[in-house]
Amino acid sequence: MQNAFRLGLTGGIGSGKSTVAQLLVKLGAALVDADAIAHAVTAPQGVAIPIISDTFGPDFLTPAGALDRVKMRALAYADPSARQRLESILHPLIGQEIQHQASLAAKAGAPCIVFDIPLLVESATWRAKLDHVLVVDCTPPVQVSRVMARSQLSAPEIEKIIASQAPRSRRLAAADSVVFNDGLTLEQLAEEVRQIAPRFGLS
Image 1 (tube, rainbow, N blue to C red):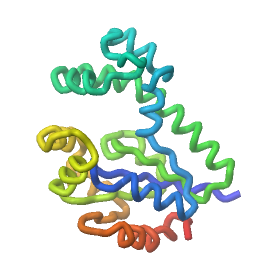
Image 2: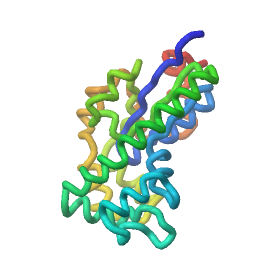
Image 3: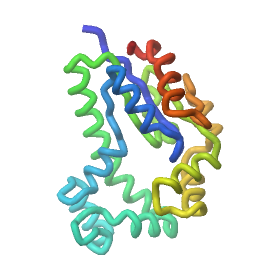
Image 4: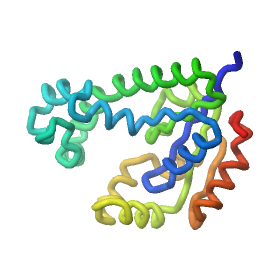
């Protein structure tokens, strides 16, 4: 049995990365979504919740018992070590679930496994695990306008998030392929993805 093609997918906030991921799924890829896994482990009853409560205190949980992301984001901006402590809790749990989902997809015969990893470029270990890195790119003003349209965040808040991610130049330098998603309609974006899909064992 042929091994599944391991495609790393990344891009800054508002780049359209999640849309590209879904387009690849429509072409037959299996998706392992690190953000979705991160939300699951920090949701009510999530495996990370007891550790977060022990480490940061129950004040950092919502009344429903999930991670209070607003409060944690504010703490992380004020105290960089808090972000490191949170990541030391979450990253091993997320990594285990990523490997579990990838193993299931490979056993199911997926021709391509898409690893949607927001911090792929920042990671010291991910590149060696992948056959190819696809970056979804757009200009920062487009990022800001897209995120403002879908969220309650202000432009300065979004710019802070962009500044906390890998620089655009660093993402592009790490890319084997780039989809420039700036000014494209959904149909044009889908066509771009269709054109590059055969490189990843998809048709």
